[in-house]
Image (cartoon, rainbow, N blue to C red; front, side, top):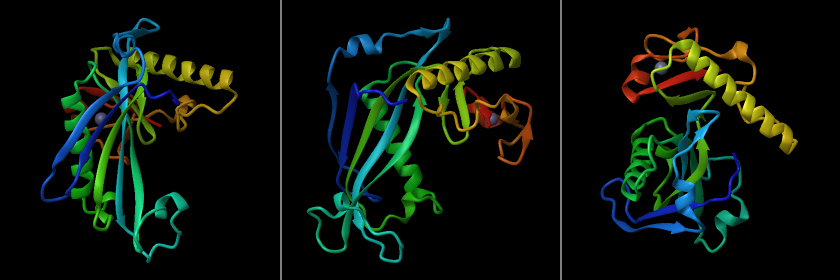
Length: 226
Ligand SMILES: [Zn+2]
């Protein structure tokens, strides 16, 4: 879902792990944001504003890694240090989030990743000059994470949820056809792939879609794996 960035929030943070110092948090309004923020429906269904998050930072170059850093990563950097970035996929918000909510969310994503021992982020060596940039991606009924889609549980029964997801896939396929590209659905275009996961939400624990496991219930979402 490549869209022009309409709203960008930057929270610049100077020290990691021990103490965060938010130096600046600002919303850049590039064009008629009011219109972009108006609540909307798609094919008669409630749609949600989607936001992704990208962390920009500097770190030690781990020479154990086989791949060489790109030129943008070493430009202007001292020996042994490189620039890097990491992006989290977009998720929906029930309502248009405030600047404070976006800052809190982006910091929680980063904190969560850096605390999780096996995450890619937790292996970053001596990160400094962190900027967390939240980008508005547009409105949608469903959003894609990693080989699964989610939306908020608005009380539809299973049949209603599957019909809603089918409409979403059909829209994405049509959009891709117009644009002359493959749909970015990670396999959801094939309905036979759709699955749920009960009762513990594990990847190997497949059941008919949609997933209404305890984690989905806690988050107030329904999920379809594929
Ligand atoms: Zn679930």
